[in-house]
Image (cartoon, rainbow, N blue to C red; front, side, top):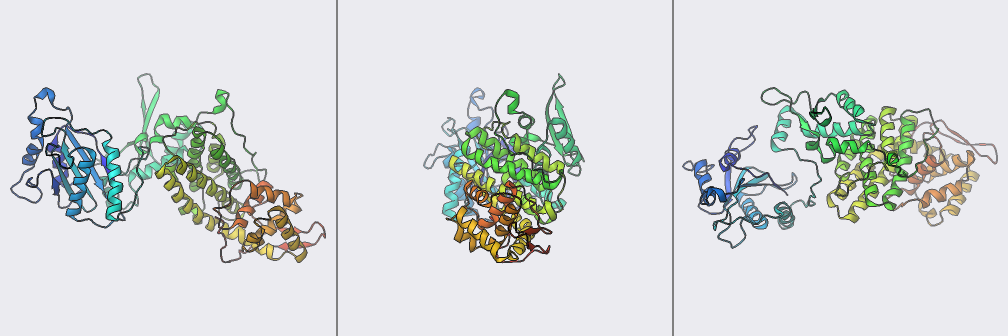
Length: 573
C-alpha cells in the first residue's frame, strides 16, 4: 500500500472537481465518498441533490471562520492511498476504515478528537482513494502534521499486515517518481508497455552510462531519438535539461517534456555532472584496477573481460572502503548494468534489461556518493558501449557469461551493504536484480560451459586424476562438493588449460576460491571456471580448443562445438 502526501493547495473546490470529475483521461469511474469526518456529509457522486460547492463549503467552514489574517496560505491537504497491483480489490467499507486510520495517524483527525480537521475520502478507482482535508481544526487551531508522510507510511505497513496485503518497504525519499494514473492510462491507450516517464528514465540512464562529459551525454540522448531542451542562465551557462519522446504529445499536440530531476533524483544535471568528475583531479588516490585483458584488440569480448575485472575489484571496495566510496561504486554498478543491457544479445537482453531497471532503485540512498573513485566501473560501462553489441556466441558470448557472473556477486554485495544500513527498498531492489542476473547467466553460460563440460569428459584418465589431485590440494574443504557437481568437468578442463598455459593450477585455484564468498553460488565449480579463466587470461570460448597434456604431449580433449545439455547446466549462481 502506497500513501502519498501531495503538495498543499489553496482551492478546495478545485481538488473536488478533479476527484469527482472524469479524470484527465476519463480514468475516473463512479466517484463517491467512502468516509468523512461526519457520517452525514453530502456525497455529490451518489446523491443527485448534493453539489461540489456544498461539500466544499462544509470542508472550508473552520477556515472561513477565522479572520483572513489567521488563515493558512495553503489550507488544502491531499493524501492518496494506493493498493499494490497484486492486492485484492477492497470494498468501500475497507477503504473507509483505511481512510480513518490514515487521518488519525497523520494528525488530521485523531481518534476520539471531536475538534479535528474536516476531511473526506473519495474513491474513483478500484485500487486507490484520495483524502482531502482542510488544515484548520474545529477549535480554530492548526493540526500538528510533522512528518505526516512518514507516519502515513508507517500506518500503511500496519494496514498491510492486518489486511493480508502485499508487504512493501517504507520509502526514504530517494526513489524515482512513480508514473501517475493519467500517465498509465495514456500508455494503455497508446499501446505502450510502459509510460513515457519510464521509457525516458531508462533511455537517459543508458545515455549517461560511461559518458565522459556533457557533450557526449547530450549526443547520446539525441542519438536515442529523444527531443532535448536545454535550460541556460542569463550568463549562458547550462543549468538544466528536459527530454520528451517524439510521439508523446499533450492535447495541444505539443511534446510532453520531463526534466531530468523528475525522472530520477540522480538524473538532474548537477547530479549527472558529478559522474564526470575524477578523484585524480583533486590529488586523491583511486583503488587500482587490473589492466585490460590483452585478449583481442577490443570489441565486445574485451569490454566484457574488463567489466569482470572492474566488478571483481568493486566487490572488495564495497566491503572495505567507507560508505561514501561504497555508495559511488554501487551507483556505477548501475551504469555497468545499463550498458551491458544496451549491448547484450537477444537471448540475454530481456533479463539484463530487467536487472538494470530493478537495480536503478538500489543505486541511490541517503549516503551521498563520493564520485571519482569509481572511475574503473564507469570506464567499464564506457567500454561496453563503445565495444558495440555482442553477437551472443563465440568469445563475446562466453565473456558475457563471465561478466554476468561477477556482476551477480557485485549486486549481491550491494544487497548486503544496503541491508546492513537499513536501506530496505534498496536491498530489496538489489535482490530482485540479482535474480534477473541469475536468469541471464543461465542463458549466457549454457553454451560455453557445455563446451567445457564436453572437453572435461574427454580428458584422459591420468590428466583427470591429476586435476582431481590439484582440486583436493588447493581447496580441500570444497573438493568433495565440487566433484559431485556436474560443472566439475568444466572446471577440470579449465585447470588443464591453465596448466597448458604455463600457470600453477593449484595456486590459481586456491586464490580464486579464497578471494570472495561462494555461499550464494549454486554451482561453485561454475564460478571458479570464470574466475580462473579471467585471472589467467584464458579464452572464454573453447569451442575449437585442443588441450595437450604437457607431460605426455598427447591430445587431452577436443570440443565438438556443441553444448552438452545437462541437469544444472549454467546454474553457476
